[in-house]
Amino acid sequence: MMNSIYNNTYSEVLVFKTNIRKDSEVTLVGKLLADENIPKWNIDREDIDNVLRIECDHINPFVVIQRLRAAGFECEELPD
Image (cartoon, rainbow, N blue to C red; front, side, top):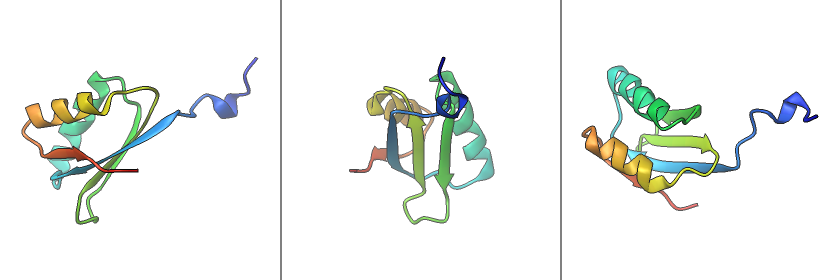
């Protein structure tokens, strides 16, 4: 049986530059990411790049970029 401390451990972290600034935009992004089954994420709106950080298991970054761009946001993956 796996120890519960490991249940919320994700295999990768994806980082994106965005133009997400407003609370309403953060709420919309939350709904978009929930549709992709992404449980853990945050946006640093104090950073000049409004960095979106996603902790996940095996999500293609292109899927995130496509989803956000389709909703009218700028989104590009930042290098590791």
